[in-house]
Amino acid sequence: MGGNAAVIWLMHGFGLTFAEIWITREALRAEGCRPVLTFAGIFTLYLLSLIVGLGIFFGLLLFILPGLYFAARWYLAGAILVQEGGGTGAAIWRSWDLLQRHWLTAFVLGLFLGGAALSPLLVDANEMPGTGQAFALLLGFNVISAGGIVGGYIASVALYLNIERPASTLQEIFG
Image (cartoon, one colour):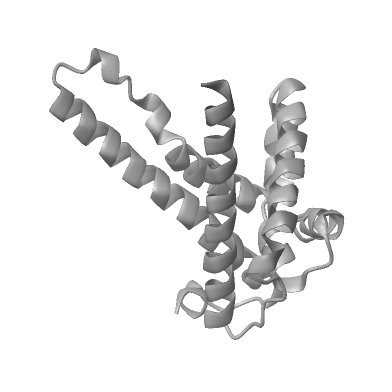
């Protein structure tokens, strides 16, 4: 089972990365930007996700707060990579620089949407009285999770564009 689980985990990661490229590119195009990263860059964005994830993981091992701070400062890395290209290191450092004054906003967005994305972990199907109820609850939490994942991509683009091209109102950002 271990080999199959690893393949499923990798395919899930590549599927999410493909979705991130597509959603980010469409959100940027809707705002009149021309994204650089194509779907062929899926491995670059996947590598970026692994590097950022490992950085956050090691930060969390250092008493949790550094990991949360790293997560906030690297929140825009994926959107920057899709928009500007330039490689994983450049996207990480550009996100770090852009969020110098806005890291708290990124932290709150990431906390809220990341919490939604992790919501299926709250379900213990073994303790549900009926399988129909367990299935409905798990399905509901997975819909919330999908909203958190997609919302995270869209929120990172909106925050990135707001920092790069400040809008006078939120209405200008969200149309």
